[in-house]
Structures are given as C-alpha cells and as structure tokens.
Amino acid sequence: MFRQLTAGAAMLASLAVAAPAQASPLPTPDEMMIINVVNANGSGCPDKSAKITVSPDNTAFTVTYSDYTAQVGPESSPLDFRKNCQIALDIKVPSGFTFAIASADYRGYASLARGAWAQEAANYYFQGHSQTTRIEHNFRGPFDDNWQRTDQVGIASLSFLPCGERRYLNINTDLRVNRGSSDAHKYTSFISMDSTDAAINTVYRVAWKKCF
Image (cartoon, rainbow, N blue to C red):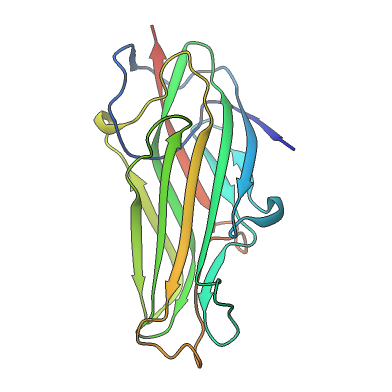
C-alpha cells in the first residue's frame, strides 16, 4: 500500500554518470513534487518501519528508521551481523524539470568493542539504469558514540533522470558488523540507523535541472 508524501523540489544524494545535454541548471521549481513509497523491503526496515518526510524548503527528504541495527554478540543470531533496506520511490517531478541525487547524510549510533569493525554502505539508481558506485564508510572499535557520514557528488558527476521519463528511484543501504579480534561470546558490538533521537536519520538532497 503506497504512502503518499507531497512536497516540493527535493531529492537525494548519489554518484555516477553525466547530466543529459537537454538540461541546464536552474533554481528549485515552485511546483509541488509527489513521492509515493512503492516498496520498502529488507531486514533493516521490516513492516513499513521506514518513514519518509520532505523538508518544508523543498531541498531534501528524510528517511527515518525504527528497527535498523546490525550486531554481533552473545545474544545475537547468526543473521544479525548484516541488515539492509531497499526503498523504491515513485516520484512525480514538477513539469519541465528533472533531478539527480546530489548528496546524502547518514546518521546513527555505534558501539564497537576493541577489535570489532562495522560498515555503512549505500547506492542509488533509477529503475532500468545501471547502479551507481557503491559508497562505503567503515568504523573500527573501540567506538561508542553517534556517527555521521556524507556521500557527496560534484555537479559534473550527477546522474540525472532523462527528461520526460518517470522511473522508480531505488535507494539501497546496508549495515554490517564483524567481531574481528573481539570476543563475541562476551561483548556485543552494533551499528544503528534509527529514530531513537530526532537527529538520527538519513537525509537526501536533490539537484534540479530545467528541461528544454
């Protein structure tokens, strides 16, 4: 069942390919954009636990998670070391515009025993297009704190949706933890992206271009 979110010109972060020749830079459009969450699947976002909101200034949208934690330790199952979430968005673009992912901020909390390590990774792509380069951020124990990492792309490297097309935008993220040299029978290590704190979420920003 789709969840419809209305909001102005906002959208994501990513990396890859060059902008199409039929588009040139322009300010954010005033017309509202509509985002339908087609699907949200994965062990990191079960039972529609991922929520999406669009910023009032139409420059970004936020994905907030309530059950996105990877962990290893004495009370963890063999599958808990990796969690993932794939979100498919159907985006109605304002007339005469197209967009690309410009940057993404990822936030969360991690607690890693000495010798353990964790990783946050993401990629973004339009339905029917090649996936963008996978971006990975690594963390090494001992670590016990909030974390934030940013994926950012130069304007020349942005991958724009071809003008006039309407395709699902896919966002794939995953978290994983490895016990490394730590004692997983004694210590629990984990990494989370969640909504325990309003500041712990994932923010995506969009770059707009005018179609001719």
